[in-house]
Image 1 (cartoon, rainbow, N blue to C red):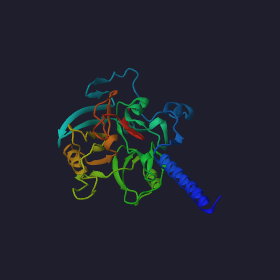
Image 2 (image 1 turned 90 degrees about the vertical axis):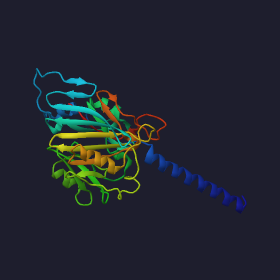
Image 3 (image 1 turned 180 degrees about the horizontal axis):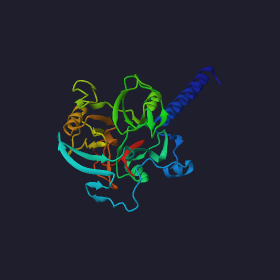
Image 4 (image 1 turned 90 degrees about the horizontal axis):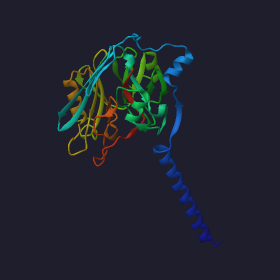
Length: 308
């Protein structure tokens, strides 16, 4: 083979190899599922360990829950759904009061922790018997950032200046910065759940974002999801629709302003955009969309929910 033909051959081979490697990296990052941990079913885990559930004991003759299209109430859980129209945007708010923090839970899509392991919020919610659910922080879209669920540490690699939301064993919510405390220290401090998305919206009753900061995020109107605490065991689950002709969406400052008006003392921005989904009593109540052209749920890594 002439020298110039050999050079052409090896150049082509190198180009094909490089293209194949690039395609693999893209697929591995965004498409190929990698399950790192499969979670046991809660009841099976309790039976195997002999441990009792952390939920308060239910009386044998407990009254059946009272459920309507916009409310749920039993002896331990009270949920009231209210729809708002603010900032040319449709908002869905669940006002939740619990007798125990054990009813505020999280779940992984497909009952597994891993990369690109996803499912629609409603599918995961139905699988765990959720009464109310919203999408979580989509931990699977990030390579770093703390992941603690149910008191178990799954990822401890920190992102500098990353603000996280911590749900402690007593049910209180707090904001931490990953560069200031390790994930293992959070566990020692009683962290049960840690969400790594952000930013914090309200701290100590005061708005924690400004119109000037978070350039590119705060000043864009988008679908949003937030979790907030009003007082001990009193929470707000909030989803704002956006990117459609009917619903513009919110900036982060507008979302913080809205939550503060509802009495939030601590509030945090979870994954938004096409992920924002509000599920209640077997139905998706909002209109999830990414581009505004198609109304459908995006598959996500995890949910936050209320359940028995």
